[in-house]
Image (cartoon, rainbow, N blue to C red):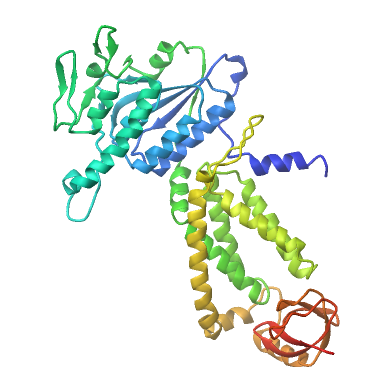
Length: 469
């Protein structure tokens, strides 16, 4: 058992495994090529996250972004830039035909930009879709100024950091800016700058600095050679259909949590193991699977949830009243639920804890789910026991537990039984009645362990007891 704990710890903490590079040990450098070949939406974000984690794990020296996009969501773009920033090696963008809007933002967040023949980059003004209009025509002037200011600041910061011409970037975003270099007006006020590969690599000024692009290269292999990495191990990160599935699953994460919690709650409140438990567990499996294939977390958090659930079951069925196993199990389950959507990778020896900002999405999902659960539990507690489905569900048990009518007769037979409290009633707890351990509840008063009690009534499945003096 002692030999197994390091393996268990590794499985719990390590994220989705990166691509395996066979024979990479013989190479001096490793280059990861990460595609952005669609609109910049969550599925693309998952591909980039997986590629960056793989590059870090493999000790890659260079990451090349293979870019062809019409743009995408600003929030996704900001998160994508944050992910790229985690890689400490060299980052290069290869504009393989087009990098419009958000694609231009991402390109500026790399040290060098190269372009394919006939490629274009720019047209990065933010567009807000509102009812009653389409595109920029529908954006109120004040809203447009606010959006442009925020995006411009973000992109300017990256341009300054990586040595790109800030004036060029601003002309791509803000139509009120005029771009003039060496007495040549490259973009007039009222226009949004878009550059071809030849325009972007044209040199200006006394130092003959390229406008934006470091050069035109025909293929990715040519780019690798120009970077002096022709002998490096090239790892191409390929998009998979699971990224699309992961995006869809994560969009419905609050609903999955609601179904999972309600399903397990009903299962614990009804005899045997049936449909609610199956549905609840299936919802949790899908929830953890979504986080795993999105590259957010390792499958170990799902394993941690299962372990916590087992401890909770042990507390209820085998060692009632101890509280320790149940409390530890509940904390493990809650921790697993939260961490499943936290984009965190512990790196050794530079071990770092996740920041509070990394918990934002997870906390939002959990909060929405708990609010929904509270509402549904109120409705279920009031109406569900009176439905025909509840009666049918309770009476059917794959494990041979008594039907509802039989359970009612058993309750009647237990009225007046004497027992001993095994966990303090505050007001709920457990008590021994002969060979049976029952869930009991007092009439509001607190009753200590070891106190003799008598069953006077039932509230649902819980026996109502009073102290015997």
